[in-house]
Length: 210
Image (tube, rainbow, N blue to C red):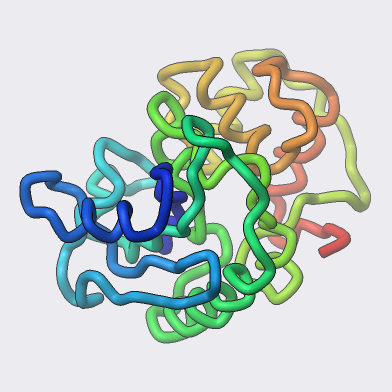
């Protein structure tokens, strides 16, 4: 897997200092600065402590099965803002290289909030997933041939769990799904659009505009 994070700190140097501090007990394989500079923090063959308590599909020990990339951004606590073009321009080839070398599927390029919905919101609703999807580095937001399966709430949550999310915290799981695939409205409510998007994602080849 590849897990994308935002640093959630006031600036890049502060984030690097924290990721280098053994006492912090947090680390990542790479950090991508706002100007596009990439710093390798941990060798890829080593375990980094970036995921914490997390789950995705069949994986409960995400740190053992993933490359963690921290993207410098102050996050929701310090003035969340769009990610600069230079930063995303550097991130895309980094993700492409890692994905190709390890044979990682698009569905396993995820955000921290996808794998830990009850605890995390990063990289957040401003992250341009569509840019990665356009070059087949992440799943697109489905927009074509959508059909509403009219699932009950229990049916939607079952489908969401099948897709990969931990649904123990119902509201958090729904909001994490919305933050990733319907970021313009993150309300934790299951509606027809959410059902249609999730159904399309469960099909072999979800179709989107990206």
